[in-house]
Length: 499
Image (cartoon, rainbow, N blue to C red; front, side, top):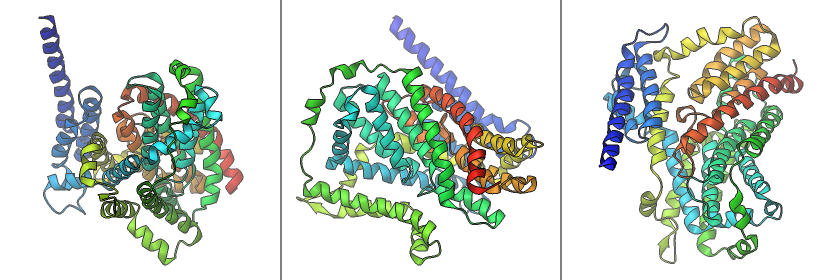
């Protein structure tokens, strides 16, 4: 009887929390908007707040579909230039049709191919059997996260995170950890934050830093210097990453006692033998996709006007990804395709795709002018830097970029701050490139909630992690990033670029 009562009580609370979240999504738009935010902007903020509540307290799937339906009524106002059909179809384009949603789906399929071929296991065993990694659990953790940081320097943040999470999941299984254990949770959070930090450190294959630098360059007329950017981004990012590791090691202190039972000599025997034809073929195709992702980054630096770069830039990173998936489906070895796409669709997790659809629809729309949200931020947040020294101005912009991107989305945050901050820097005599770099780094350091950044949504949905752990550690990482960026970006920037 008590169990039935508990279930009834849980169901009651479920409906109450659902009603609160839906009420915010539906009725928030009727609150008088503070100028210059429009009614559409208020509706969008309602969807944003409601989704956060529902995702956090109720469910991570059905709220996205409700948000898509509600967004349909505002789609024409928010996207007047691109709107062509009924609002629900525009909402579909902005959610499941968003390029990031499609890109992530492709990377999941590619990772599935590598996993089925045994390559993920091969990489896992390599990490497990390094001499330094065998010293203790924390040298093992350090090496794992360091490898993720290296990968993230050259790959898109989502790609780097997905690849490293697949490796981590294999490690958890090999070491006997279960879902809910402390160490896997810390590793998933650490990999996610590492991918984000690495993304800020270089502009190679990193679309958003290049986008933000391009906006600043169009205002100043000075082309971006990628190498100089890295001379600032790498030391700043490395400092943040080392402090992250220090935080996990000295303060979070997850239970690593299970490592006492790990026989590394036994694990050594689990290392796969030489690659067979099937695995080699999968690896070659995946490396070609990787090469197609990396080449435009170098071409943009070495030959930005070359026909090859312009062609690959037009193709984007998504086309070689889906071309690679198609090739894996075409090529057969031993009578079977390298990637059984139909089978893969049944095995990959769709939760991140559904979550991303809602994130990108709402977060992407926040940067649109008809919402009035960009104008409100420019009018109410940017003036806070008035009357400060050049050091303080850059520090304030970096800090505000970090704080705002942790409650909004990094794309509109970066666009708004670089668009407003660049002319402000020029007017105040501050090097505008230093200001742009402060935005490029700060606006991409989002750690707390799913709408802030795509990788955070992945971490929330990861079976070995939970939203609470991401959020709590994300708050600490936000503080660490604020201190490091405020202290280092201006001195390093002026040293590299001049005053």
